[in-house]
Image (cartoon, rainbow over all chains, first blue to last red; front, side, top):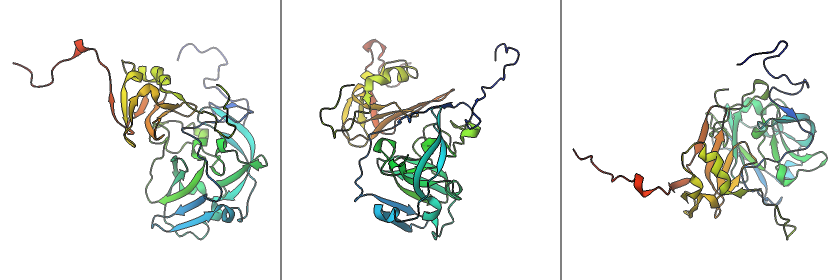
Length: 199
Length: 108
């Protein structure tokens, strides 16, 4: 590091206490995408939760939204450095989907319409930390933001909140997903700035 | 970007493979956009410049214009470049004839 002037903090500190290191605030909602936006009709849509034994639980669109929903208001943090605070969603807690599922798995691989995948520890999907959401700001979730439904795991970088979610596969071993096999961090905690492997 | 004539047609969300010239030239000494690649998924063969590139993402994702499967991914971290070519069977790269040496045993 070069010459440090008096009073310099060394590392850039966000003025906003809810802003993780290296992030800036945005008021709009940037659209990031690694491929064409899948168009899934609600009659064809289904969500599949499978365990390490191959047992499957399936929900159609109507079955999913007959479950109790919650309205989380959360901050979201994208690995490309933008954060958006106080976002409003409606969805089903993943706890509700896991209720009664018999598993010894430690890991989850989330998969999406269009082929996207992302991995995370199963514990990070439990205890009110994750939802399958279908509404944003009181309206149906637009396709470019992951509609008809996406995963929401706001305590991790937003690439973990898979758009166009189709299912979750539970497993005994960690299986890296789309960005996790291309240099991005396996866990992705924004408060520890875990952007890339080795962070 | 021009407006779509058909309102139900999705907005074009990618650019063509010429976008890859800068990011790949940082890694390779030659311009790879003039190379010919074969899609490992559908077998389509064509210039890298004709790929569909999604760059508004945590990395650069280049897809086959025929089947839209991923042919190339490039992630630039502060100290490395991660290049994934598993979706490409080969890249045929034009090379100047003067640098050609015949493969085979070296004459003693």
